[in-house]
Length: 185
Ligand code: MN3
Image (cartoon, rainbow, N blue to C red; front, side, top):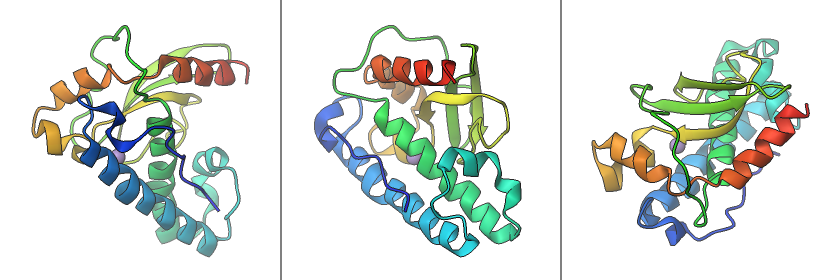
């Protein structure tokens, strides 16, 4: 059974950068739905209990194309949001890094990823894809969700303002811990 990352902070803790209603909807509706749908599809495909990273890296092993698509979308959504919610914090912030995230048009994600040995990659993915699903050899260590549901209630069409505000909540300690983990293989 795949379990949602448990938030160690309240929905309103990231105000004013990310508002409480957006956090609550994003976590308790969107992320919860990806998690439930992943569990349902994984059960049907006979892959329940497989490590999520390993599963996403080997989607081709799922013979049924409908289930493969369901696991790509919902497994991606499950993994991506676990990363998202675990790398933001009320104690976040610090030095921003360029124009990460503005390159992804439409619904998707902007990523900072790492590979064994410590190489870093900036990239963007559509939908709920990520560098693991794309077979890049890199593992995401920070993701900015640029689907409208991540910012629309507060920022409306002003995605750049959301991305700018997002830098105030990035938990660089968590990102550094992810980096260490990937770097050490
Ligand atoms: Mn989202």
